[in-house]
Length: 117
Image 1 (cartoon, one colour):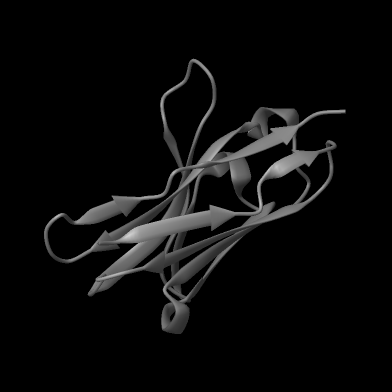
Image 2 (cartoon, rainbow, N blue to C red):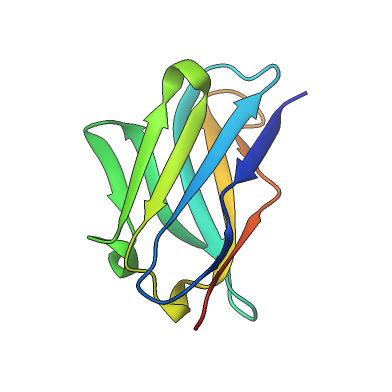
């Protein structure tokens, strides 16, 4: 059974930083990509950033220049360094792992990020 465990969320003031971590464990193979999504109250879940390799990353326009995604393939882990946080970054952040076989993707349970003074 595959499990994604996220950590690093919390309350931070505007302009502050947080680092999210996600570790995948269990019978997980053929990982193609890892990423982060977020969902604010009353809004749809949206892509934040994904990483296939060091040279193949994608960011939502709203976080470019502020967030950095990285991946440690040896540890089946993905990280999201979030700097210059804004109140509009407040959301539940979900880790996603994309694999090349069924079921094709896995999700974490989510971690709350709140940006407020």
